[in-house]
Image (cartoon, rainbow, N blue to C red; front, side, top):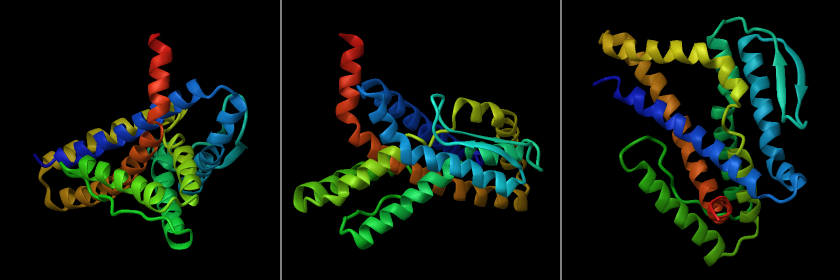
Length: 241
């Protein structure tokens, strides 16, 4: 079934969003002082909104207002993009692609200039992707905290958690992009089922690129998940006691 890669990539993107939303809920639930939670979230919030701003520039939407910090969170208000529906998808899902790319740059910087050691993580989706990522994460923590005790690695973990918490589109983002996402999903499945060679080839390349981004996001999401395990246990305990 030629549509299978498209469905796998779509499922991976949904998993990245679920991890981000779930971790944000955990951190918000266990952080005793709201100000500390906002400090944890701050870098991610700024980059989340900057991703929306970039999406506006790409799609020709005019920015009307930018808010980075408020009681309701950050927001970017803009006019309708030049390309209806599809432009809304680009703007609303921009953090889902931009933040993993930024984290890749952060990882390169910490490895190149601050002495952190990073294993090779999978960059494509396969049956062993999660297993390979899990083994890599164990190696990541042991190399930088057990064998070398690199203090810069703690800053790296803070930035990773902060940015992963902001990867997911907000509920308003999803509402804005709902029609466009539905159209793209149906169109993608129909293209794969059409068996038109040049259309299928183009769709496969787009799927491959999206899969690369989602796989990268999944790896960083799993790193943040590993950092958050004690908080997840405490969160679960406070809910069931």
